[in-house]
Length: 421
Image (cartoon, rainbow, N blue to C red; front, top):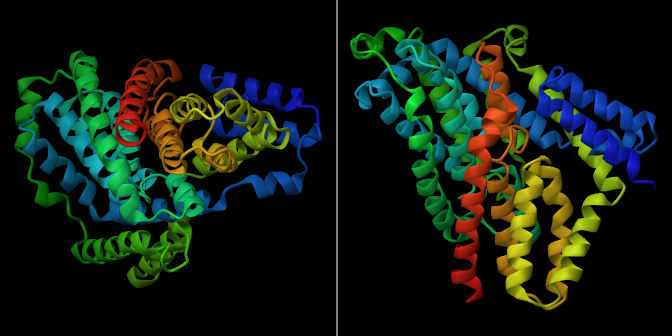
């Protein structure tokens, strides 16, 4: 099959996204429809390319977040966080980044940003500062934190399943690298955002004087919601052991809370961010065009031919290739495409374990480069735009690109010292 139509549609779609020309969901769906009409993929192949586990995981967590938002808990958390930071905007950014990274290690990074973004918007409004630096830092921190565990980022689930690696394997091998990268991220983020986070003394005092207890609107729903959220989190931890997918766990939690709280399902469904979900549907299909025509697979085979039997070159080459491609291609379908490539490299006699960790580190960390590199990025970008504070592609690229280069450099040293020296 001719690869040029798929490549052309991909480049046009991503150019429109990067330039901010058109609504994200319309651009992505337009690219998907173009591939179908051009005959690059059939409608059945396009629908099969959509990772419905990701779509329904997002939908389930959006419902849970919407219900918890009704309790007022996000406002309570916002005020508590401001007080813990002493009202200092820069210290608050560091604190929110730490919270986002820690949450993403236990939940997935998409769920984390769905829960944290509303808190951030309220905090910024109270302090009278732009929420964009906070939201940007949370995206980067959540992707770094999600790198640490099996359930922290969807690509890790794919790698773990293919390689037979469990939760403790990821914790032991990925968490040390994630911690080092997170510390480096803070070194970059603090001077980058310092100039954008100035709050007047009056605003800070007003924020510290707020009574957080007044925000809790429904104590019963809050208790019920926290219990269900806790059980859902446990479900994520044990989903693979029970033979279930994260989407099933998220939908079960959302359904259970709707039923137990006796809420109106139609009203809650209106609170789902359908624009984000449709964007992902279109994006999966656009990337499938590259997969179906062999473009991404050719890159992987070229890597195998170029590296031969040199373990260091192959491992670090896979890391940087994955990081670079994940900056512009959603990392979930890319990971699925590269898993067989790792098997091919291992069949040539190369050590398999460092290759798996190189792939996982590359796709998780590389997604921080652009607004479309990872699922969490897209979710926060849509939340920010909906609140009247859009994050531009170039604005995010300036810090995200730098963070990714530093992250991949640290990951290279980590892989070399731990597995290849």
